[in-house]
Length: 237
Image (cartoon, rainbow, N blue to C red; front, top):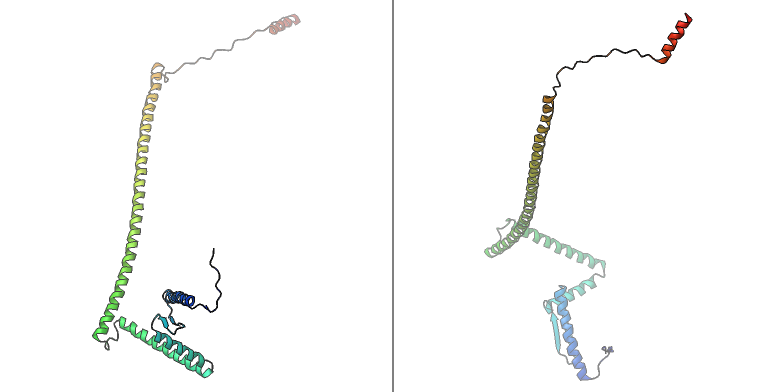
C-alpha cells in the first residue's frame, strides 16, 4: 500500500513532533547543501526548534550571507526613488571600471609589463601562473600534433595499400602482355608456314610460263531452210 497523504498542520503529539522535526531538519539541511554544490549558489539556512535550539548551514559563512541579505534589502528599499537608483547605478559603474582596470593591469603583468611595483612573492605567483598557462598551451599543442601525426599515419597506410594494389595491377598487366606476345609470335610462325605453301604449288605449276592461245575459225552452219532456199533459187532460174 502507498504512503498516505499527510495533512500539513501542527502535530499535537510531542514525541511524533520531535521525530518529524529531526527527519525533516536533516532532509532540509541535505537539500540546502546539495543546492549550494550543484548550482554554485550561496545558501544560508537557519532553523530554531520549538525548544529554542539552533541549527544552521551556510555555504560560505553565515555572516557573509546575512550581510549580503541586508545589503540587498537596503538597496531594494533605496531603489524605490529615482535618486537612489541613480546612485546605485553610479556605484555599479564605478565597480565595473575598477574590475576592468584590475583585469587590464593583470593582462599587462602577464605580458611582462609594469612589474616595477611587484615584490618577490608577487613575481613568484606571476611566474607560477605563466608556467601553468605555458604548460596548458604545450599540452594542447602536443595533443593537436599527436592527432595530426595519427591522421598522417592513417593516410600513409592508405597510400601504401593503394601502391600495393597498383603494383599488383601492373604485374597482372605485364603477365597479360607476355601472353599476348606469345600469341602474336605463335600467329607469326603459323603465318610463315602458310605462306610457304603457294611456293610449293608454284614449283609444280610455274605461273610465269606463257600459255599460247589459238582462236578457232567459225564453221558455217548448214541448216534445212538454207538448202530449201537454194533449191527454190535454182527453180526460179
